[in-house]
Every structure is written in structure tokens, then in C-alpha cells.
Image (cartoon, rainbow, N blue to C red; front, side, top):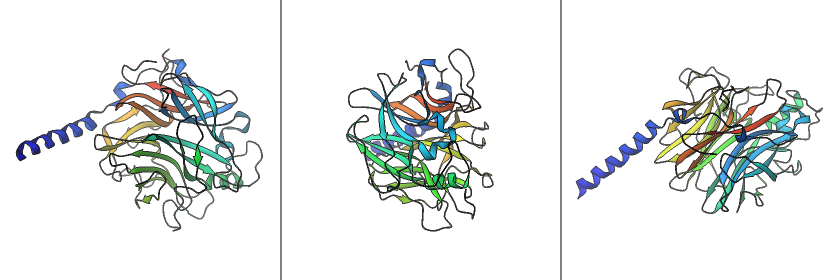
Length: 361
């Protein structure tokens, strides 16, 4: 009986390993129908995190800010909104603003951005980045001294709701803050949260971190990981950056915009391969895997989507995809969501749903 149990355990572990090693999202990527393009008139659309509501509808939490403010005003005037669709691939329609500006007496009073929504035991948790500053800016001003004050005020929060289109209750303090030690990788700012529950109910939180170097814009951009037994924290940080390349130490940024999930005993993440260290294609999306959430390696099939994607009319996209999100149904990948610019002038941006395999609109 004991030998039989051991044999079954070994087979199950082998199946888990085979599953993660054989996952090839790139082979599943299909051309994008134009109906899978989500725009919000008068606004830039960025990010895009999708979940299914209890009513069977599909909800996208996304960032938006006025076109008249210019693309780089996201840390100043962005707000997180909700869109709804009857089908996971869309079309989506704007419903309401979920996290509006609420005054600079709050840590996230100026802007909310980078939504990442996950559901667990009947609740929806929205991890996001917030900024707060009273620094004066001219309309469209970017990368000035005062603009950096907004960018550097980024911290990570969480809001909770019973339904994605309901009332989101947020905390009056960040759920993840900068480290007090000025020599750490995240001493200046933290942003770009990605979260998931594992099979034990523990939360893994991946996040962008920027160190201090004496300059207002800080030093290298890296990614960190923290864990908590509660979605509201406290989160315990790992002290070593993740998504590092063997020769990537000199790079300003190696990876960006993670999406993370846990499946069959494995942590998986999709990241933007900023300089092509993992896929050989600068700006492509890369699939990373980890058994413990702290040590990450490129998957056996690392490339997910190239630096450009294809529309259904065989037209190539004008820009790369950013801010990845993967929608899974009963463990099966159905759609990749990503934000992209409409043109090199950054006159507009939108979110697209990339079909995977035989998924239908």
C-alpha cells in the first residue's frame, strides 16, 4: 500500500512538471479581432485586469486619464474604472469609476493606476498603485522636477468588494510601502502590483521597485516579491530582486508589468521582456516559472507574444503590448489582455483581448 501511494505521488508530481514544461502560450496565440479592442472615448486606456463576476458577466478593471492631459500624465490624473462584457473577449463597455481621486490627504489621493484584480472565497481584491502630491504642473508636463514627485510617491494598496461593479472599499494606508532602509532596492518607490492566492491561501505579491541613488528619478528598476497570509497584509518582502538575467545587472530595467498566477503546484508569471534577455525579442512577453515564488526562471517555452501582434486582417500592430493579463477558465488559458498605443505620437491607447487556442468571441 505504501509503495502504491509513493508511486501515485511520483506520477502526480511528474504530471505537474510536464504541465508547466509543456505550456506553450505562443503556440496558442491567434490574430486579434477588431471587436476585441476596448476604447473609452476621451481617455487613454491602460492596464486591464479581467475577472468574472458572480452574475456571469466579465469585468475589466482598467486605468484611464484624459487624452487632453497627454500620455505621460498617468501618475497625476489616472483613475481606475470598470468595464463590462457578456463575453470574456469583449466587447467591453465602460460602467463606472472604481477608484477616483480622493484628495491628497490620502496616500492615493492624486491618481490610481495599475489595477490587478483577483477573486477568493466570494470576495474580489483589487491591488493597485496610488500617488499623492500637491506639486504644481502645467498641463501635459512630464519628466520635470515636479512630475517626478508624483512618480516617486507611488505606493501599493488593496481594495475589496463583493462584486467587481460594486463599491470598492480601500484602506487609508498602503498595503506595501517603500523600505525605510535607504540602501534597499525599493527605497524610492513601489508600483505595478501583481497578486495571486496559492493553494494554501497565501498571497504572493510581485511589485516594481526603484532604488535611491541621489537623483530625483532614482536608480535601476527591478522587481521584488512579498508574501502574506492575508490579502490585507502584512507582507513580508524577499530581499533579492526577481526576474533577473545572468548578464542583466548592468541594465536599467530587465522585466516589467508582471501578471502572476498559481497552478498545479507552480507559480507562473508573464512579464514584458524589456531588453530581450528571456526571449531574444525586446518588448516581447516572457513566461517565467517558480516553485517557491522567489527563484524565477524562463519557462521551457518562454516567448508568449512578440514585440508586435497581428490583427485578424493580417495588419501588424502599431506598437508593442504592455501590462499583460491572462484570463483562465477552469485552469485553461483563454485570452491574453494587454494595453497598446495607437501610434508613435501616443495620441490614443487601448486594451486588446488576444484569443488563445480555440477560444471564441
